[in-house]
Length: 565
Image (cartoon, rainbow, N blue to C red; front, side):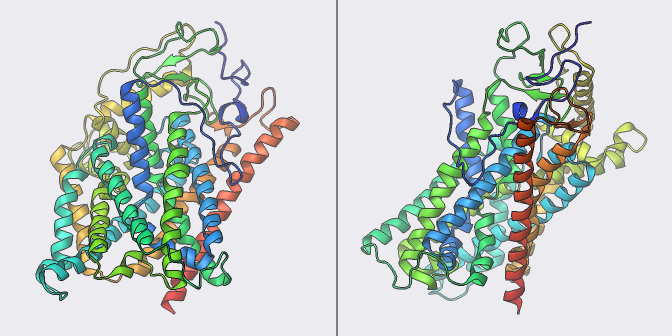
C-alpha cells in the first residue's frame, strides 16, 4: 500500500509537520501590524459571510468600554495611550490567530473545545470556568450600563430629572431582558448579523456625534494635555482597561467556523485538487479538505490558501476597525477635557440633548450586542441542559455517559442541522486511520446530538440564565469593583494567558495528538538551526502572551484593591 504523504515538510512515514510550514511563523507581533494580502475570489455567499464575520467580531470587541478610553489616555498621555493600545492590539491579534489556527487544526467548534483538544481536559475546565464567570459578569455589566445610561434620560423627559417608576432599574432591566431573551434563542452567530450590524452603525453614529461636537467647539485642547503620562502607578492601574478593549476571543472560533462553511460551496477531491497539491486529501462534511497530519496532530484540516479568511477578518477587526475607532474616540475625549475627563465621557455633557441621544444610543448598542456577547455562554448552558436531560431521561443508555464538553459539541452539531450521514472519504490511499477516527467521532457526535434536550428545555434554561442576570443587575447595584476584578482575572486569562498556553502546549506535545517536529528528527528534538529559530520565535510569542496577561492581571487586581482602600 502506498504510503501517505503529509503536508509539506512532513516525512512520508507519518512524522509531524514542521511548525514553520503548517502553523507558519507569520503570527503577528508588536512590530508587525499585519498587512493584508490580496483577498481570494469569493462567491456572493462567502462575501456576505465575510462581511458578517467582520461586523460580528468587531461588535464583540467594541462596546461601552470605549467611553472609558479617554481616561486611559489621561493617565498614559496622548502618545503613551496610542502606544498602549497598539501594543494590546498586537497581542490580541496574535492570540486570536493562535486560537483560529488551533481550532482549524483540531476541528474544534468552540473556544473550550479548542483548548481541550490542545492542552487537555484541565485546560478545558479552566477555560469553561473563566468563560462562565467572565461572560455572566459581562452580561450583568451590560444590563447595569444600559440602566445607568437610560435612567437619566427617562428622568429628564418624564420626571423633571427626579427618580420615577419608569426610570427605575426594575423597569429598564426588565425591558432589556424582554428584548434580548428572544435573540438569545438564535442558534448561530450568522442569525445575529442584523443585530450586530445595527450595533455597529449606532456606535459609528455616536462617534460621529462626539467628533462633530468637538469640531463645533473649534477643536479645543485642554491646558493639561500631555504626550506621556508621568505617574507610573496611575499608568499601571489604567492599562487593564486598554488591555480588555479588544477582547473578543470567546466568539472567534464560532465566527471562524461559520466563515469557512460559507466559503466551502463545492467540495474538493483528490482528482480536482490539481498537481500543485502534492498531498493525499480527504473530503469532510464542510466541503473542506482534510490531512492526516498537522501542527496539532492527526485528523487535522488543511486548506491551500496561504492565509485563511478568518485571519483576514482578525486583521481587519483589530487594525482597521477597533484600533482606529478607539484612538479617535479616546483622543477627542482627552483633548477636549484633559486629565479630568470622566470614566464615561458622555457624562461630560449632562443635560445636553445630543449627548442624551448618544447615551440612549449606547444603551441600545448594549442591548443589540448582548446576545452576541452571551453566545459562548449560551453554548455552555445549552450543553449543560442537554447533559442534564440525557442523564435524567436516558439513565440506562450510552447518552447518559456524555460529559458537558461532549454535549456541547453534540448540541452545536444538532443546532447547525448537520444530522445527515457522513459522506465517504474520497481518493485512493486518503482514508488514513486518523481520518477514519475523526469521521467516526463526528458521526457519534451527531447520533448523540439527536438525543439532546427538546427546544423548550433549552429555552427554559436560557430564560433562567438571563432572568438571573437581569435580577443581579437590579439588586446588586454596586458591582463595579467585582466586575473590574472579574475582568482583571478571568478576562485577561481568556484573552492572553490561555492562548499563550495553547501555543506553548502545542510546542511541547510529543505524541499522536500533536507536536512540532522538524522532518527527519527524533522525538527528543535535534532541530536544525532554521527550525530551532522558528520554534524559538513561537516560544517567545507564547511566553510574551502569558507574561503580558499576568502583568495586566496584577495591575487590574491592584487597581481594585486601591479603589477599596
